[in-house]
Image (cartoon, rainbow, N blue to C red; front, top):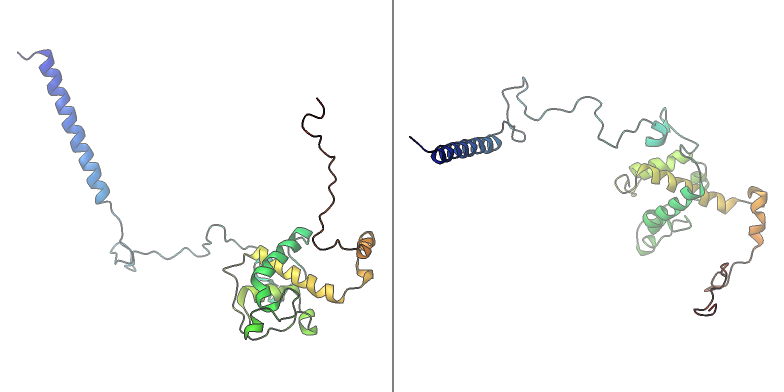
Length: 218
């Protein structure tokens, strides 16, 4: 008659063997998992294509553009005349930043069209201050950034829609600044027009109270 120890040892061995076979079976199932190799023929579907077409109106995550004015700069095929986003100082500052990075090499920082690339032989774009461009609705500039125009390539891949509107708003600000007068400035801001700019290299005076030297209060 087998001892209790031998019975226990035989049971443990059987469990280990069962676990080993089960693990090997699971691993083999993972290796042989049913799948389609890319673009291979499939007998499962009627059209014999393993790569299934996208469902109609599928939109990639984060790319839903439900607002036509914001996404295209047009409504019913016509360029929008007003910004589809709030006009704020932060928007203009962002537009200036993006403009100086992507646009000024050709258009210059003032919009005259004599940027550093043009001075080295690239075809000169028209000035933003040309009457024809001053008369264009703001959606026109968004569209040109999105799709390009003439020798200008599109910047849709480099500049997201929100930043395209920021640039368009800044371009409009450049146009207005060239032809604005004092009456266009809000009354509360007009005193700033007479303020003298600080000398070059001057530091802004500190408004903080001077700190006591260490040990002075001891």
